[in-house]
Amino acid sequence: MPEVLEVEQRAARGKLNNRRLRTGGKLPAVLYGHGQEPVSLAVPADQLDATLRHGGHLVELQGAVAGQAFLQDVQWDTFQQHVLHVDLLRVDASDRVKVELPVLLRGEAPGASEGGIVDQLLHRIEIETSAVSIPDNLHLSINALHLGGLLKSEDIEDLPPGAKVLTDASAVLVQCIESVVVEEEEDTAAAGSAEPEVIGQKGTESPAEEG
Image 1 (cartoon, rainbow, N blue to C red):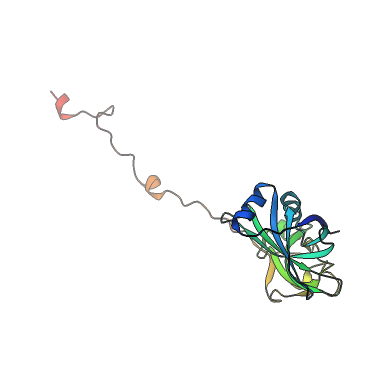
Image 2: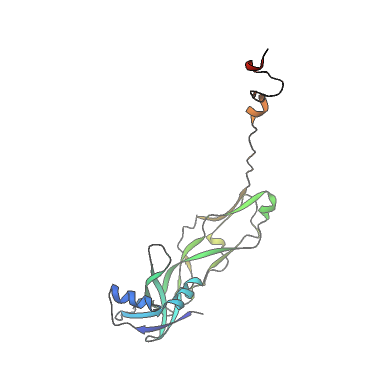
């Protein structure tokens, strides 16, 4: 179910007005698409933050504008800590969009008990799918992954119906490789040589102590 954003019409524009908007707990946004004029909006920062934390891509707009929209572009500050602006794209059931989704692993790999380690090479892949059926993430079962085995995008178990994977089909997502144990090198210098003589050590006389 899409996250809800309570949007307001935004008349004032410019950096100064946008800064004031953010100080008040809201963010500037622009709604595009479907041949309609762009609409300048203000969206609650906490609602948008919650949507991003949950990995959402589709939102339900309520308030000044009603309908579903796709998070087309999210602009962050230099340190990737705070959202500065968001572009929204109007969508309906017939629209298809391109989106990058995280790939999560499920299960336990038999290869782990065969002396191997599971190595996930790609954590996200890009797909093209219906705008109204975008999942929060995708899953890959490793229950049949043995030592020396690998998994690709074709092994993903829950692609949305009609979705197309845009990431290179030959790209390896997960592999089980042999665990390499690095043996510590022996300290041959310490093992093959006597301890250095210490001046003044018991059993050794210095010239000053003779006669």
